[in-house]
Length: 386
Image 1: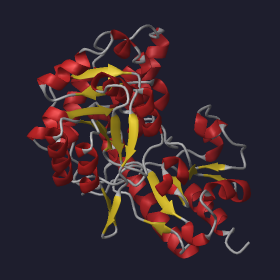
Image 2: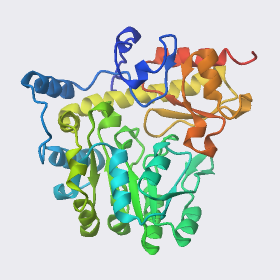
Image 3: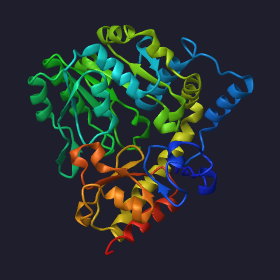
Image 4: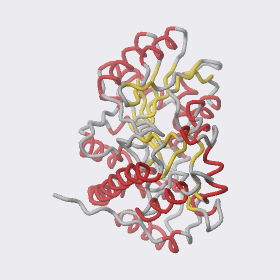
């Protein structure tokens, strides 16, 4: 059955929003940077939030606002993942969950492996938790990005105590295979380390691509792994503040249970209500339509770049709505997003903020209309030859 793609809202309506995407730059700039999308919310989410506002339901978040049961059903339905409800605990956002778990398992100064180019807050979160970043960059294998398992093994053998995993990976959109994740778990177990897996982009894996929750990759993964995720990325709920920490063994569950009560108190009530509505079967059709729209846009970007910026190196992401594009052949320096913003009036994420591997790169946000994406590429292409 063909699924009709979700339609983005018109620009004049989007510019009435008060979020970062629409308040950072003047109106002549097309904002394709921060991870916010240009679509209406799923109807079930809108209805639940409207009901809460009408009731004045704006108090403290209760101990169990339904998040556990909602995620258990969602994980089983969308990923075939059986989650135990008592091994789900909420917090404010994914990066807060990462920090608190790392604090609990690290000693000050312990090294944490990250795989750049990677989501810039990873670096800050490791430091906030008292750790030291150890960079093991992704490797290019036959035109696909992969974790450098040999490099990670060397880092763990050298004393690194944790791996902070992006699964699926941001900014490349790579979906790590079950075999790779299982090997990563074996390496962590062999060296007494843990893996904290940020799986916020998991709902955005394209149909036909196999996504493996880290905790299901192998028996070793259940023992060494912690998953932190949220409905915020896939359902455009970042401002509402709700994430969950999931474990699969008694030992790791005990670590999460030992976190201070304030970690859970920081969960936003509207975030919890919206997450429950997002993870309800009633929102599945919306998500499927979103995935269809993102599939069209990732393919559209490939066509646009081939036609108007053939120097660009772009690999279609397997997940998410973020596109990693190499512009080094254009000779626009280490940070081409700066020139693109000044001269083309298109705001993209700056590649170097993802690590040294991001020099000469930009990150596009594909969560927009085809018309906006087309206009953005045309503006950037007009700079060639100037």
